Image (cartoon, rainbow, N blue to C red; front, top):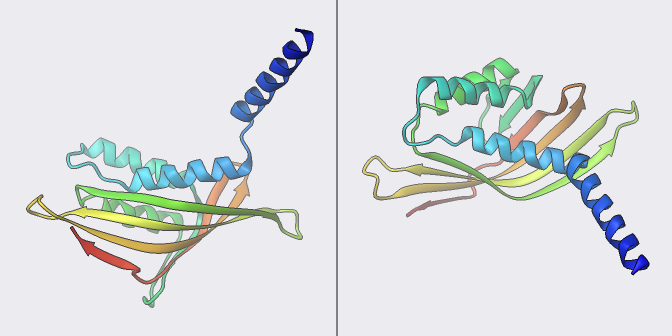
Length: 168
């Protein structure tokens, strides 16, 4: 009986540590999902909700974030620009963003800075005007996250050319 009590105590302690002290990988994964949720636009949304979603997005971005899309000559530089473009996207009701198979590698740089590389596939679903069909696009995304005093923040993203479009 005493042995089982000890085993149960160890398992409970491990569960508490896992729950209350998440790893860097779990924090980054949660931030990636929060960004996808933030970019998802409900069919009907009040203006204040759009503002709140923009603020949620901004907290995950470094001030000097760069977003590049392969096949385009332009890139987005800076948190204000990225949040502004995301705000325009927010005017597209019925947009759903999801991330699949998130692979995360965390490394310490020579200067002691923690940097994470995230590779995932972003799927964007857009409801058609008639509401009967939707377009689905998938793109591979490579992200660089940096650990800052504010936590893990996205500093660079590269979005590949279109992988698949499926009208459904």
